[in-house]
Image (cartoon, rainbow, N blue to C red):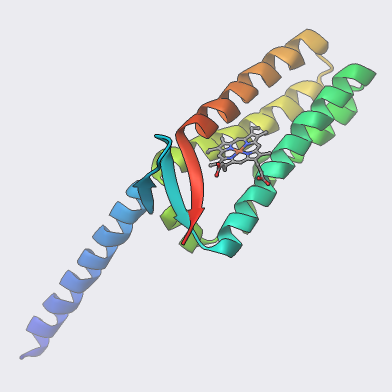
Length: 153
Ligand code: HEC
């Protein structure tokens, strides 16, 4: 085999690998669950990591509600930031390949919206505005929970 053929083969292998990774990035590692939700297959440690992040999201929601009760817009902003985009740095590329694209999009959307709630709260807009934003946010939590579950193999 001459050098040209070897480089063409190498390029084809790269293109193939990128295609496979691209398809994985979109589809994730999923099965159809018994209760109709999509099951995402994770390792035990990945599941522990993601569920830990979920509990942090719930903590952010609780902190926001507490801030509303106390009429403390700074506390609302601080709690919202706890669920914001700065949380996403822990997620490994291996885990990203297992989560379907739609799941990743919804997840990033929720983090970004927490940043938006924090930004809005800094302006001290009054509790109605924050309650309305929290309602929008909780609809995203509910919608994703209705569609997906985690499974370890
Ligand atoms: C992108 C999808 C997605 C979004 C958005 C999402 N969750 Fe989750 N969450 C899940 C999945 C999947 C599970 C695991 C459910 C299962 O396996 O039955 C879960 C589990 C949880 C758990 C249980 C944690 C544990 O230790 O068992 C909590 C609490 C939680 N989510 C809170 C939230 C809150 C609050 C929000 C919104 C601010 C939210 N989640 C947004 C997908 C999502």
